[in-house]
Image 1 (cartoon, one colour):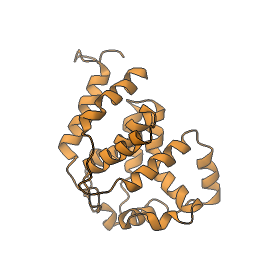
Image 2 (cartoon, one colour):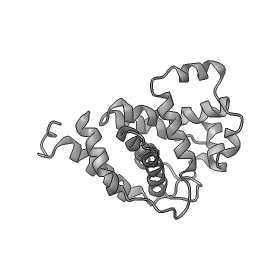
Image 3 (cartoon, one colour):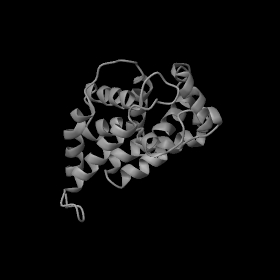
Image 4 (cartoon, helix red, strand yellow):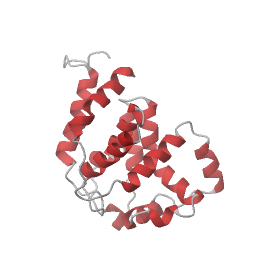
Length: 194
C-alpha cells in the first residue's frame, strides 16, 4: 500500500495503530447491558470466525463489527433512553474508508442480518439476549417481506448472517480468547491485499 501523507508510515500501519488505540481507549467499556466488555465481545466474535475457518476479511469484520460503539460518544445505556446509536452505519463508513467491501459490508449489514433472521427463523428471536431484543425494536424490528428479498439480494448478505450468528454468541464473561494483537497480522494482510 502507499505511504500515508506526512507520517512516513504505510497506510496499513496507521490503520492498525488506530484500531489498537480505539480498543485501548474504549475496549474496557461495557458492551451495552451485556455481561462482557466491548473488547471481550469483539475478541470472542473474532475467535468464533477464526474457529469457523472464515476468510481473513470476515475474521477482520468479526473483530471490528462493533467498532462504531468505540467511535461514538453515546452512553452505554442509550437503548434504555430509546436511542439507536446506528453503530453499524458508523462502523461501515469508518471501515469503508480503510478496508475492502468484504470487511465493511458485512459489518454495515450485521444489524440488518438480525432483523432478517427475526423475520425468517422462528426460533431466532428467543435466542437473542434481552439487550439485543430491546435494540431490535429501535432498529426497526423484523424485516418485511420486501426487506427480506432486498437483503437476500445483497452480495454480502451471507457473510453478514455468519457475522450475526457469531455476534449473538460472543457474550460469555471471562471466556478465554487471543488478544487484539493476535489479529494484527490478519488485519495487515487484509489491508495489504486491498
